Image (cartoon, rainbow, N blue to C red; front, side, top):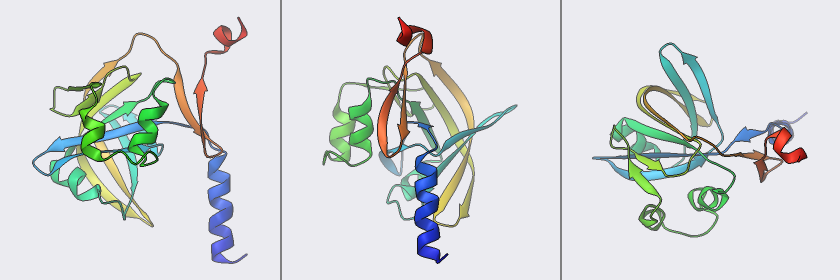
Length: 170
């Protein structure tokens, strides 16, 4: 199997891996930006740590690294349009995305998305290059949880709402 074919098959296989949709944001001296990301994973609860992967070619990397802090906003099923904005699918400029009235500041000064299922603010403790991506290890310092809501996942290259099985059966 040739390298390009193997890469495409790998991407197709990963499209079968359901993933929570998140908007990862940062604000500080290096600027303010955000990006839609599904490559987010818990690492450990002691100390609370999360891993976030961003393409090495993303223009956002210098801002994330320069600020040294970020917030992972886990989207609810009604926030698909925000996911599309921050994925660059709607043509909305970065400042326009943050001018929407759905943002508040967290304890670390990071943009928290109102209505998110969870917002996890943290400090970037390590950055590792692996192939085409940078892996950010983030020490979580502040957690805001919603009392209710349903998730939003990305599966087979499309957004899908996640409804609780019992509620969906009713």
